[in-house]
Image 1 (cartoon, rainbow, N blue to C red):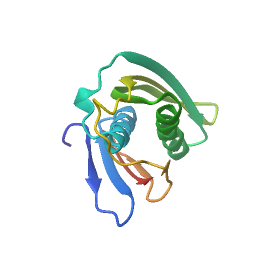
Image 2: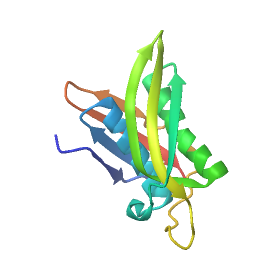
Image 3: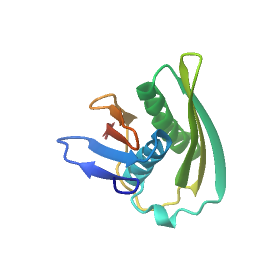
Image 4: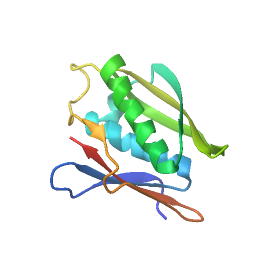
Length: 145
């Protein structure tokens, strides 16, 4: 498997993404990078000035991914933050629930500095699929624009 990453795929109306990594955590991180890239295409200009730690809990891995990515939309809408460093440190199953811990680094969105991408209205369950294999994880998802 090639190193972790993501690619945009053909979709008639929305943004469809395939992300991958050597672990579930790495694939979740790559999916978050794809969301950030949709919002502001050049992540390299985002300074890692502000650190935010987040924890998300859900009943299954799909809901965990949905809630994790929805948190980015909430943070962008409320705090106007975009992130260039996304590190999912741990995803664990605790008493029939999944729990995710992540560290995000970025800065406030600035029209003079950051390119405007597409407005993501919502994360969707449409085409959402998480495929875990022995040494890799592949995630397919669609963002509603």
